[in-house]
Image (cartoon, rainbow, N blue to C red; front, side):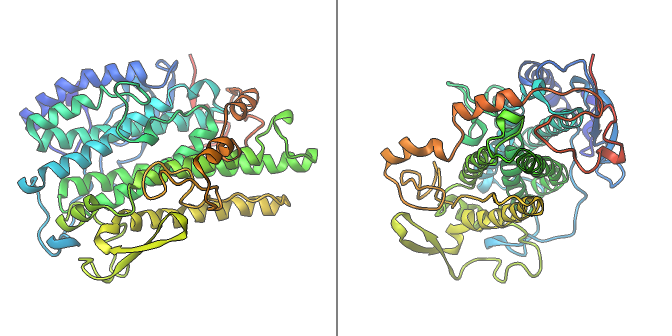
Length: 465
């Protein structure tokens, strides 16, 4: 029932909004049953549920069947603030949609909203091959929270965009990840997630893009969008944790197997070769870079000037000196080793991407510290930003992971050296078998350092019927 949905948006007192969401709710449940996690509808999962936006209410734990999860609608607590950037700097935040920015705000909300159900669709088959009950539970936690983030964007569409918003909310349940006729809006959310290495790389790199997109929207002059995304960021942090620690656990276990068996080809001994892990990193890092858009972007300049979308940590007192970005230029790389300087406002996508890359590099250092401690010479790395790009200056100018320019013919012939191929997946399929015993762990991944919510690792995080 729509009235049972936990919220802090006064849903009970808004008859029009309640009626609109009541009409959307059954379509959402049909979508979940059709393309949500496959085969686990009756499983009781130890999940975190937000029941309020307070510090003691956003994370309550208990067993629940996923179709009965309480997807809430929450805004972060209001803040005394001014719009912090662009031509609207120092103005009061908008509590309603300004007519002149209606189209731009709707586009941003729809695009963000479209990513949330897409990731659930991409991950729906992974439960069948989970390496442990701990990891199975984490997959399902990510899934229900991505669906809650869909609710967050649908709330904004219904509450502030009238009939257009209701139609857009319906379309969010019509598109499908990878569908030939009705694909999701962004390429990364149509890419297949074939196995758990894909999943960990997706939550590490693609959900980390989500962090930076949400953080830039948290600066928005449209206050309901700002408050919605600020609350979403508390949940997004867990998704990145799953990905970052998942890759680290693979690296740790692979290094242990390399020392034990004195070989790098680990498929034969039940492990993941680090060379294969590197291919997955190459693929998902480059796929996620495309989500930032073109380096030189008039749309990004418009969003910044209008006060719709800021930079990462725009509001931090010591992070940027010029919050209007009317002065200075940004140097972008171009194919062939050339460069160009563009006005700062047109470089907002690239500036956001730079912060993202720095964040990813920090994770690489942690993974490589694990490899170094184990005595293994291999080191993981991030490919250069020109590698395997489909958007931006290098979309039709391929390079190898070190940045050496390639002809399109050479790229097609050699890309299997750097990104996963069908053969890589087939080798992994022999290793990536499900493990469902309480406290047990697949042999290709190390045990995590601790359990969920201070519980032991051998806790029964998922009751399987």
